[in-house]
Image (cartoon, rainbow, N blue to C red; front, side, top):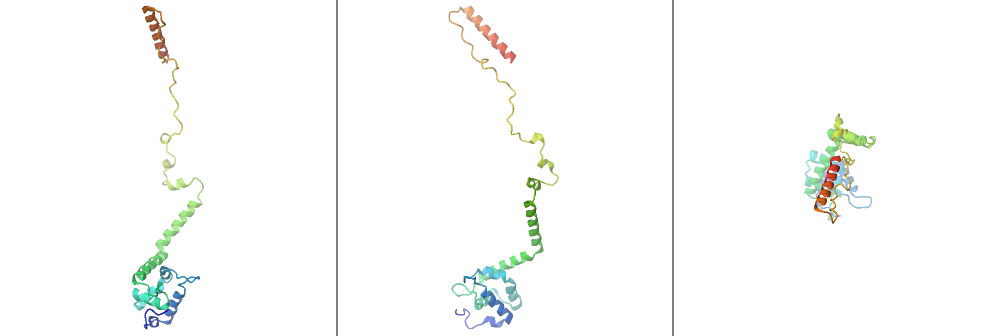
Length: 198
């Protein structure tokens, strides 16, 4: 493939160990099936090499793309990796490397792993206790009067007999006015008595 930087062999300006390292990065750029890996993977795995080129040799992000192109890491059309892609990939690689080495990040990861392991091996029924504040027994065992009863309330009033509220049957036909009134009074008296007994 034609060298995209023409007759300016930038790799020749670097020490032999760095030239060999960049060529090794280019060889590892392809998978076992010959397909190129993502550019971000190159920067994640070799961030210390690119930081060394920037800090000790004054290489810019654009120059890093040209050096990789000379070594054999190029875009599909043969052009060097664009400046924006190099800058973004190198920035992400530095952040990930810093997170891997930061003692605070490592401690938080270890604490999270320990907490997850504790929950995984906790006895059955202890998940709620782990989530409740320490010493807060009321959160785990609320008072009896605050508990919601799932049983239906008992019926405190007995139902009246079916015949209590039945309408009084009219007086039989053929009774006189006084007899009809007397029958009505007797029926009302019986009804009142039944109500008092209730």
